[in-house]
Length: 277
Length: 123
Image (cartoon, rainbow over all chains, first blue to last red):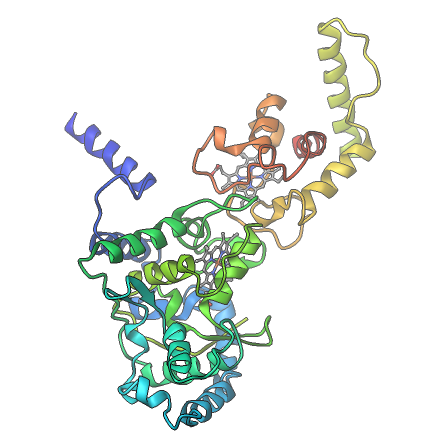
């Protein structure tokens, strides 16, 4: 009897991630153990490599790309842009005093004063507007170059995103979690359908990457884009695939989604920027 | 050849069904070769069924493996109505399914779903 009851509650729990009063930490543990069971042969540290962690055939080609990566020039351009002073004589380094030590692993974070999630791109543009400069476009171009440079300085640092004990922070986290599991679009699919439940399966000729580790490699140089893009650019593409109206890059919705996905990837190393097909 | 045999049996069974119901067996049944071709085209079309995204189907390239291969459909779905219902709205059988609710979300019209389902039933 008890056995049946436990089995039942496990089924319920698995089917509805919201039924329980799960804390972010509970979620993280469940998320991780799901993927380690699903891909027992993949070392935890390899989940930062997206689909290439599980697709042996594509991995070779990818490794060849990574020998002479297309994002290298983005890092160089980003370094130049980062070093340039604003009209008022200040520079990015004044906004990011610890940038040399690597800061990307701490983003996004929840700012309890403003009640908002701060992404690295958001902080880059805030630095600009605080200093009287125009903000950069959000999805590609200069912002990804500066982002690539900052990511490169963070390589090897473990993602360390916190959900403070604050009603606003928990609400933001839950908003991202909800987006991840909710069906959307005319085709009625959730992020979780493709990157959780069916990760490792083939959709047409593509293997679906596990969501664990998704943010670690961004910004990415994507062959399909013939250029760099932020993770919000990618979110928009994945929303469109299911014929859902994408949200704006840096909307509260995508910031929350990035917050959730990055929290789930805590402890994995930043290895951005990276190359994707 | 195989196709013709299928059409023959299907047409025959539909005729029998229609006969049972007491209607005159009109030849307006949907199972003409042309209709089966239309059903196949809809099933393979990326903007319509795009079934190959998730299912292997004979003659289809670059098929995914999220769902089971669509083979031996008559054996698995002796009841055509059940097959059509699965394609119309897979959520009836599995509320959390990844399969697209083609009917309720108007990804295909009722007529298109009929054509796809008739074709799939021949596999």
